Length: 83
Image (cartoon, rainbow, N blue to C red; front, side):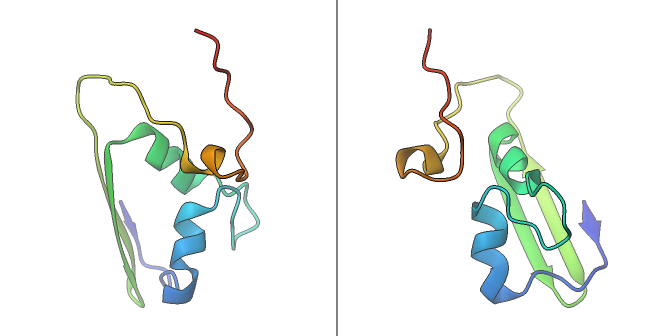
């Protein structure tokens, strides 16, 4: 997928891709978090001409790791650990 917007400023790239709930558009800010949760690899290229995102996912399901923010007291609500 790609767009022709102004791109993500380099100084905002870490927060735009790693902080759940971050948004410059007044949205819920869940897009990048959901992308990382559901795919195996995500590649982002951004600049003044827009942003391109390439997503890769294996056909075989595998267990997902616990989001990093859970381990460091981040923004994500605690996930259920019941088996």
